[in-house]
Length: 244
Ligand SMILES: [Zn+2]
Figure 1 (cartoon, protein in one colour):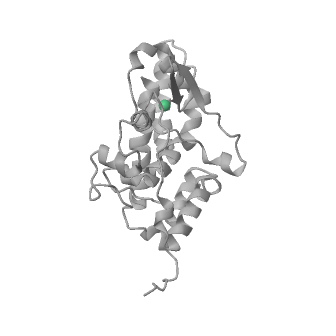
Figure 2: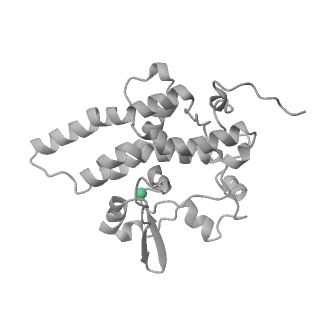
Figure 3: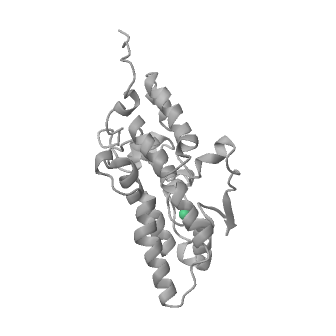
């Protein structure tokens, strides 16, 4: 339960604290908040009750505090059409400086991915920042599989996908703990179909991004867009001549 709660919490609160909250109103980074309010409290309680920490504490939970919600943010923004709100990119030059201060190395990892996005926006090609298909989704937490950005630039080993073939079905997991949770009680979760399972099995028709958006009940007016119409990409940029 702790692990699954962590993933949902990172998705909802991590993005809000580190990307959506205006810079002047930010007090703690999400990681600082987690360390103070969650990590310390839980470790104190575990110790007081004489319990051991969960096996995934150091190698998975604490490590994800550095990158997991940054990767989710990139995913939510990229798949913004599937969101029912307008995601803020939150990566203006000032905001990026804050991210680098709070998460040293951010500019060299996630920042490089945002560099490419920013360049496409400045070149007037926002369509290149939209996805052409859907991400794989974890069969436990139902959140898309994301990875630390560093491996793209040779700073980390490339992650191995966690695949389990079971009863004629291929299952994917975003993390060792999600796979472990599933395997504690596979019968309980066996009937669950993620949106991607439904996409691949032909339930969603037509099997396109537009078909899936319609299946989600998202009309074009309801689909998320960049919250500031890409204003962040043009901060400190000379005004561009608009053709025509
Ligand atoms: Zn998962």
